[in-house]
Image 1 (cartoon, rainbow over the protein chains, first blue to last red):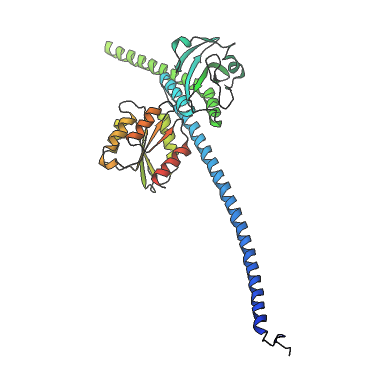
Image 2 (image 1 turned 60 degrees about the vertical axis):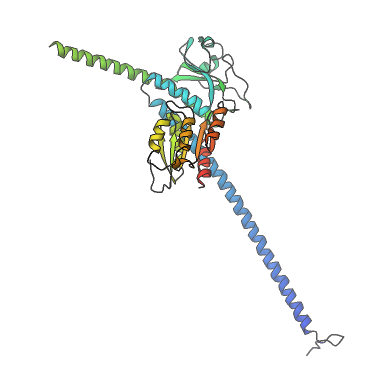
Length: 234
Length: 128
């Protein structure tokens, strides 16, 4: 049996037990600390995961918004059976969805004439040649031509911010010249480019379809009138 | 348009079909919301009469009765004096926007609108 007394003759056992308890506590503390660090790592990776999910959610929301925008634009253009209504919706799309403050819509060639506009005076809106001048590049490229920059430079009819060719099958039958955006619209958004591409491919066909529907209705009305007239003569 | 889960009713007042359709698309993503559409201020007042709406989103430039007159009329009605109103404006109409806020609108959104922005504002005002 070992002597459990200190050189001073005191009982050393409580000291030993306290030492053991301290050792045990230290081990417990170290274990808890390791667990804490492990949990902090888990929490940190969870936070990272939540952040990435939030970002992905925001991306999806934006994609959904853009898709809805393109759907609404197509639907509203194609659902009209009056050329004037198509033009009104075209104006709304440009103003409300893209933020266009002034524009001119030209049809025809080689001297295209303005058939609709906003924010421009009549004096400014003469015919434009399609093989030279500001409309020409879009007629040649058959795709929207956009001026880049943030903020965008000031536009004019001779140096527009964008020219969108209006395609019918593969032919360019007109163009939209975008001259000015709302002051708070400093640059093109990704969806603007998609919308302008959509207008390039759908606007002319929507105008033509509405024109044909109106013609067909007029013919049908005429035939109906003639038929009624014929009945009246019998 | 209605859903069984709808807890709140929203009135969208907008004369432009393009904008109205876009707003409805965006608001449909809020499950708790049922959306009713109105073409202008007069149509809105007709729909407000005898119905309960928890939030109103209105354009300012509309024929027959514009958004400013509508906000004024809504705020003078005891039933709707505390209902949140969001006005949709264009950048150029800063005066209109200020006037709408003075008349009692709670918030404004500038065109061209972004769906997520509208949804966030609605959620904020309805505390969803």
